Length: 62
Image (cartoon, rainbow, N blue to C red):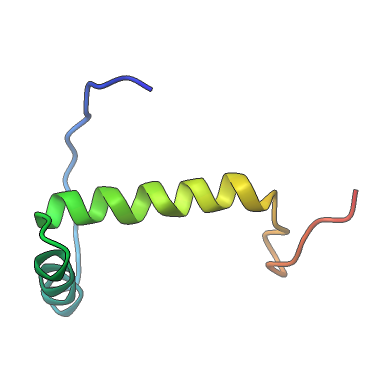
């Protein structure tokens, strides 16, 4: 993975942002760092868990 990071604008509900700020503070991260962490974990779990059916959320039959 490249160490270069891509900047982008994120529109977020103010209440969600407040919760992210609290969560980040609890884990001694910046809000940006917390968002990166959450997204990285979600991607890792998705890769590990296999493909899911988009309509039902259940495992696809092979």
